[in-house]
Length: 524
Image 1 (cartoon, one colour):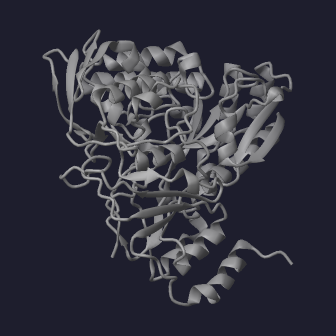
Image 2: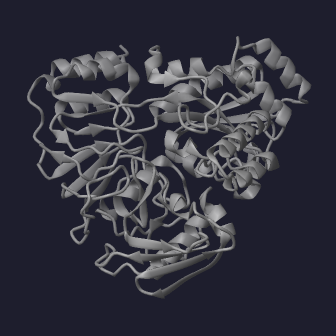
Image 3: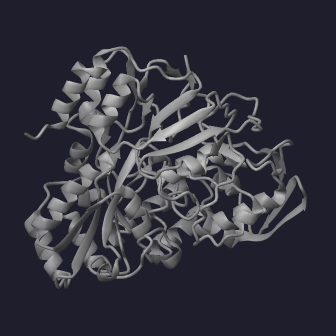
């Protein structure tokens, strides 16, 4: 007899889960992340799970506050020149890496150079940077070829510039680092890392948090747990059972269909803690057919239903999701309706089929990578795979795990040689606040995010956005960028959803941030 997920959960709740919560050591936090950690290098990959790992072990020169203002983190402060062409940053005293070595200005410079090669905003920094020096151990001096007041915003954003030792930061940005040495609030225990099962961290006893209160991704990062274990539990029923029994403390991405059940458990809390929501996306490969053809890319708009995708992801309650969604985060200053007519009205599969035929499509293989172990990505992938089948394309539907996609998406070869055509992913709403912070919007060919779109109309717009002299001018440029994006399609936004956390009542002190930060968290 096949047991459904709900039957399993009900049986567990009636049995082991009905008893008292399993005892948890007061100094241990057990957390269920949204995905398996397969890459340890937050420069080599932009995968959320690796970025979240980065925040555990690395620190940043500046962190983003809740008002989106960069605030000193490792930095003691900075001084700009009058034209914002030069900046001197001084480091706080007492900063030490996990290996006991002091953090020096040259470590920061090497980290900056490596990060700037891969990051979407960092590439603009690299293009504008004339000179970067460390006149002594605690000062960095940067000089730009033009006024560049956005520099601190670039290194403090949600996907920031993490600081690592110079010897590691000298590694080519396109080569994965496997050694992890940071200066953040937790140390990574490499010997206890079991991919697909657990990731373990311990408190960095030499870490000196800032004295001001935690403020989103800035402020004091106080580690109140001696040990943090990430438990990789891809099955939603198993994760829910573990949370209810007290075997884990916090589940980052509970399945939306289980939220009512979890919410009725008085030992648990289900809350929307993260800010800005998440943006679902279909990323396509511009280097190989069929998505190398702009006419084929445009044809897909006729069949794509954001509402259907968001219903699959977050359920029928529209309070949990937003459509239509363009290329900037809804409700933020640069969001607009520019170009969004393609998302409105009844979806028309017949018209899409005709447009696909007119595009010159000749049955080339469309290799669609489907991550089944990330609930939201799994849900949207099912809808899109069905859409591709109904459109009659030559679909190669590869169901795999997110860790495998993180490795495979770097391949530029044709699908027949191990490459890919498309996959679904999420970005944070914080990524879509401005053109340079949006990794999927950059369209600078080989320097772009996986999929490598080369779209001068978008890139030129981003350059013009930097030179905007007023919010109104910046908004006008953003509308032009969005119109070009709907026309040329670097990727397909699929909607915005709001993912709550589920956690034990005794877990307190969560910081409202775009990611699940584990500093400041306590057990009451």
